[in-house]
Amino acid sequence: MKVIVFEDMHAVDRFVVQRIKEVIESKSCPVIGFATGSTPQGVYNGLIQKYQKGEVSFRQVKAFNLDEYVGLSKDHPRSFAKAMWETLFSKLDIEEENIYALNGVADNMEQECQRYEKLIQENPIDLQLLGIGMDGHIAYNEPGTSFDEGCHVTNLHKESIESSLGYGFDHLEEVPRQGVTQGISTIMQARELIMIAKGEKKAKLVQRMVKGKVSEDFPSSIIQNHNQVLVVLDQEAASHLEEEDYERH
Ligand code: PGA
Image (tube, rainbow, N blue to C red; front, side, top):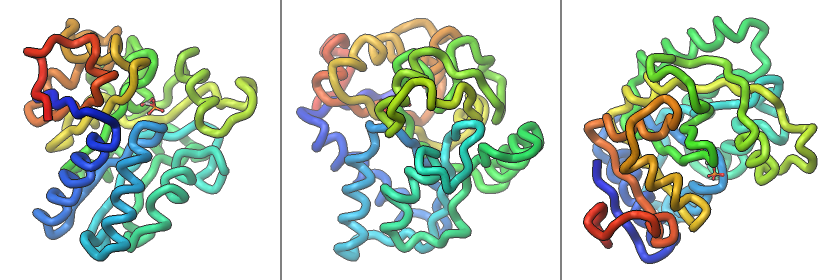
C-alpha cells in the first residue's frame, strides 16, 4: 500500500484527476468506479475542467457507482445516482447507457444485487475511487460486514445516517435506514483502488485504516490487503500518521 500526502486538498484533487486521466487514456474501454460523498467533489470538478478544455474524453468510459440508499430511485434528488449525474456525469461526454448503478427501488433487492455483481464481473473495474466513512466504512460496508460479501443490502449505522445530513437531507428522519452497496469482495476485485481522505476529522480513521489490524470491525482496513492501492491524503488527514508511513509530494 502506498500512502501519499499532499500539502492541501487541491493538490490531492489534481493528483487524483491526473491518475484517472492516465487510466482512461491507457485503455480502449476503461471502467471507473466512482464514489459519492463530499471527499471526491474536487476531483469531479477537476475532471469536468479537463473535459471542457478537451484534455480528456469519457466517450469510451464505463462508470459504476458504489452504493445507493434503499427506497430512493435514481431520479430522487437525494439519491447517489442523481448526485453523480448532477455533479459529474451530466457535464461530461459519457454515454448514458455506460453509467451503471444499483437500483434502490428494485422490487427484489436480492436479484438487483446479483444483477449488479454480474455486471461488474463482466466489466472488471480498472480504477475504483473510495472514501472512508466516519465509522470506517467503505461504500456502505458497515462495521461487522463480512469481507466475503458481494453486493448486498445493509442497515446503515448511526454515523452513516448522521453523515447523510451533509448530502442534502434536512432532518435525520428523512435519511433512509438502509443502503445497497458493492460488497468488500466486489471492491477488492478492482484492479486499482484510490482511497482519498481529507481533513482533521478523518485523521484517526486514516490511522486505523492504514496501520490498524485488518478487521471486519473496521471495513476500510481491508485495503491493506489489496496489491494496487494508493491512499491519497491532505496534511490534516495524515496528522495521526508517522513521517515514515507515507511519501510527501
Ligand atoms: P464523505 O463520505 O466523503 O462525505 O466524508 C465518505 C464515505 O462515507 O465514504
